[in-house]
Length: 347
Ligand code: MAN
Image (cartoon, rainbow, N blue to C red; front, side, top):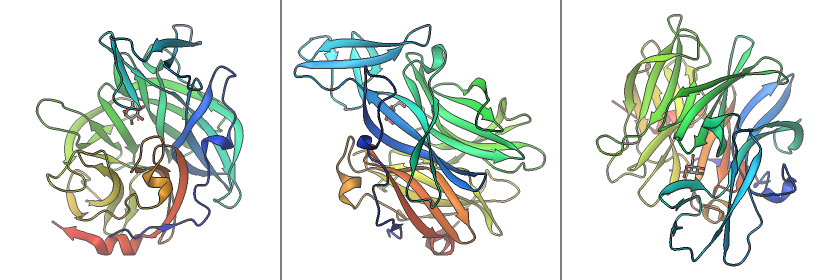
């Protein structure tokens, strides 16, 4: 059952809200923000997807070259070497490309509802981030913020890590989960002295798009991988599942919101409860989505029928989820954690 209390102000941010990072491009989508508080303000680290303004009969592919500078490939739509069936990805002469290039842009707010852009922009750096960086999670442990985000290049879709203490200087630790992997959420507390993270490798032939757990001694080298949560045939999450933001510690277990999609690429949210001492053990899971695309701004957009979250704030029982709607808009919704817990079906 959809139990989200959507902000009446939704969408909070639209592509028109922001000027592009360069005159060569325009903002196509604002989506999938990380959320955190810093010095008593609310911040969103928003994924901005940009491309060249559309022109009849043409397709433009923005990529970063070896020196990190932007270049734009121009293709003709009737080119027989072009396979163009998905708004997000194309194949040209046997190689995959993205139709937009994403970077991360910081927005701040006093009230958690009205956000304005800050100057900070984080762009892809190096060979493994050449097609852009996406869908960041921000986890705070002690005084360090860990930014885990999707790093896309011709080598595949991986997860990179940057850290910061002050949102001015960043350390780029490179790829921490090699392709194909996404949706890395680091727990905001060590368990038995170790870092823990949820991640989502993809296996094309055997297995699927399942959520895994990994451990680390330093936050950048990960091991002891275990498969935790699978997609479920005939359910709303039959094709893929992936973690949202950092799991939330409750008296009953680690409470995690996740996204699931079916084979029609309809993205909804669900929740799962993991054992406090051994988070590889699933205690309970929602049967029905706790949120599904219902509003116009969730159903139609760059890629319709999507609610996707990788950022939330917790205040007692109140969970504020920031989410990407239809892969184009930034929205917000409130939940009661107790109400979600009541939807969980135990083991
Ligand atoms: C999927 C979508 C896109 C994204 C690519 C690469 O196709 O999530 O938005 O750009 O993967 O991560």
